[in-house]
Length: 173
Image 1 (tube, rainbow, N blue to C red):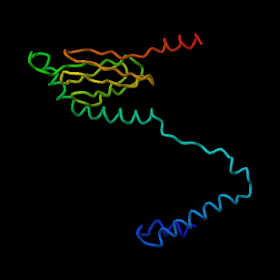
Image 2 (tube, rainbow, N blue to C red; image 1 turned 180 degrees about the horizontal axis):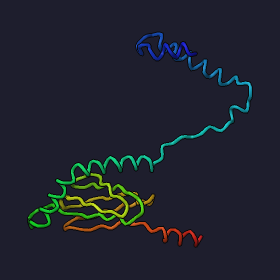
Image 3 (cartoon, helix red, strand yellow; image 1 turned 135 degrees about the vertical axis):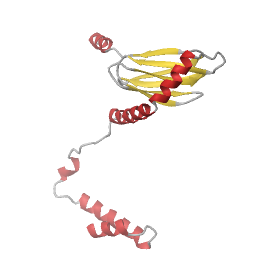
Image 4 (cartoon, one colour; image 1 turned 180 degrees about the vertical axis):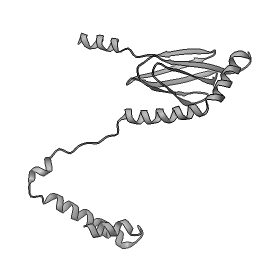
């Protein structure tokens, strides 16, 4: 079996022997699997390894945070310009998002513009977007947040998660 596997690893996929050897290898592996000495081997528990969503979210959060740090100066200049030189005809709106939870979160926004914003626990960040209708979504400590908002003026959005409320709910069960 090892020799066939070695051939398959180095062979050209268009080689006519490739498909033949591949079928033969599958047959050999199935035969060895079906002819085990101890029938209990079939039922032995095997560990299931999954990459958790929390781990994936954490990696994405760190990447977004690094990207945000690189654009920090530009974002700050744009914010200060929007605050101190208000143009009444401008279609840009400032949206401040406050994360009052104990978990980092990634805010996804889609509408006239789209993007993701990483906000650390008990932190805040902002986006400058064109006015209009947007869909906001986030995962706040494994509690989903989804909202449709219409931004016609600057706004502050506070997202939080209370562990006290969760404990209170669990005591009612």
